[in-house]
Image (cartoon, rainbow, N blue to C red):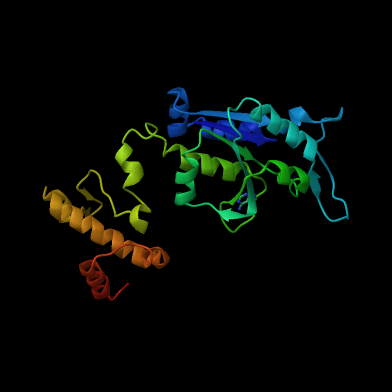
Amino acid sequence: MNFHILTLFPDMVMDGLNTSIIGRAIANKLLTIEAVNIRDFAVNKHNRVDDYTYGGGAGMLMQAEPVYLAYKSIEEKCKKMPRVIYLSPQGKTFSQEMAEEFAKEEELIFLCGHYEGIDERVLEDIVTDYVSIGDYVLTGGELPSMVMIDAISRLIPGVLHNNVSAEFETFQDNLLEYPQYTRPEEWRGKKVPEILLSGHHANIEKWRREQSIIRTAKARPDLLEKAELTEKEKKILANHSEI
Ligand code: ADE
């Protein structure tokens, strides 16, 4: 999978993504990440890529042509028309489901806006998906594109050493993850739940599932409505009066 990021701050995205698990995936050639500096496509001798908005109003807007040329420089190299994601609070809210859908693509282009945004005409011409990472306003699209690339990359086979963990975790079946513990068995007077030391796998699985349901009910009741619970599990939930 090849990610291309159109940005005014290539170092910001490359420094962030070249680290840890995604950095290792790049080194292992499971994916590539390329940041294209929109400023390299400026069409004036001062290398300016922004200008005032027609009709007045505060702030500057990124101009259409440098964005278009930067996009074209990538599109020319792709076998088929790649999806172009524009990061914006006005987009559809990013979700695990969307990450799974994007993970099926071979090439993805992320367009990061700055200042007050980008001239509408180029967005109309090149953007296929408008995506927000949540209901708050950031200074640019770089952090949202990094968030999305992280979430998508970990779904690519081989990126996580343990492929099972990408599937069986938070949001699997709309449930949050159960609590987990590692050594020591007792830490500052707090013991690991007895059942996890029992070696009884079926009971452990049952306990974990119950914990997931209880946690989800407490922290994210909205998710629980979409989870598939057995009649027995619904009863367990009903018995937890503190939830
Ligand atoms: N750009 C600025 N804020 C954003 C957000 N919340 N999501 C995506 N892109 C953004």
